[in-house]
Length: 165
Image (cartoon, rainbow, N blue to C red; front, side, top):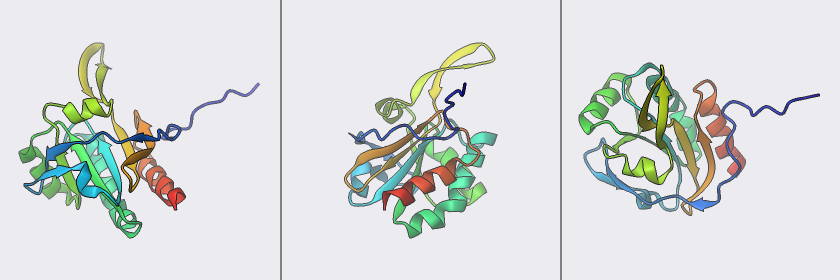
């Protein structure tokens, strides 16, 4: 008897729901809204904290694939609860070529369903569930990854973008 195991980094079935609107302060000093990207594909990844090992690896993987995403007309945006000052240092240290948005009050994370109760070493706390959303040109979520495992994740996102064509 074969067990049907979900593949690591496998996206959920297409959500086909409108991506929640938002406006947040960005690492470029401006306020950025999802509406600014109407007519373009967008990858939004939510991560818990700048300069932590897994978040750094995730962001650097998106950095390393950024050219491939750009060739396909896709913008990459990272969102965390960190302050802009932290984002500025993170971007400088790792030469990240895309915007990082500051969701200090986690309002956007809540809209996307990625602010949730977490457990670490028996301690419970509220935090970001590492997640990625692929949004089409019309502003609909077409793929969603939750509880992301870093290995091969960005390639999985790129493959999903390629499948959209």
